[in-house]
Length: 131
Image 1 (tube, rainbow, N blue to C red):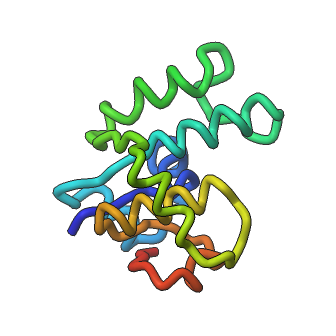
Image 2: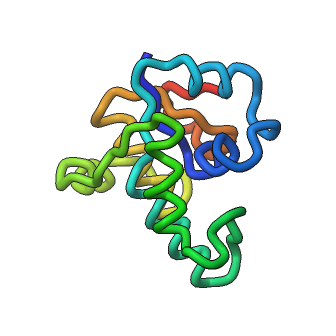
């Protein structure tokens, strides 16, 4: 299986693994291909600047450095944002308006990845999820 981490799953896997479900933690640890999206980095930077996100270990270095250090250390692959991912957002139903979630859903759909998330708002999109 190939997996894409939702932003909270990425943060929890690296900083607070006890918050993950057993099946999510196992998939991330044992999956042959597990991706951390640049969408998650964008979301983390946006929320950090707004004062709504404080990632452990990023206080003095910033979330960009946290991402660049911890994603490879956790043996996760980075998934850049492509024009195809952005174009796919246009055709998603309007189940909710979170631009980060919508782009992550588009990436999971386009790349045929199982989305690791506990966000109930994702289910109406009908993509394969794991938690």
